[in-house]
Length: 84
Image (cartoon, rainbow, N blue to C red; front, side, top):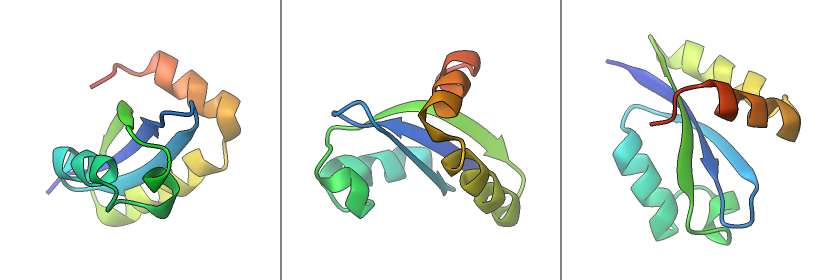
């Protein structure tokens, strides 16, 4: 099973970072308002970065590392990585 660390761009221009095993389902949940509390009031969201990872532990660690980057670091990731 592949795990994914992802970044969403919210309607207000902010970024949300998370992890999942099913990208389409998770983005759909965020856009329906049943994802994270942060994205509920910032819909619609757009998937702008995806990083496939081998296991849950690695995905969770990567999520935390990205969350600590701040806006500039996340923007660099989004610009450098091939978008979905």
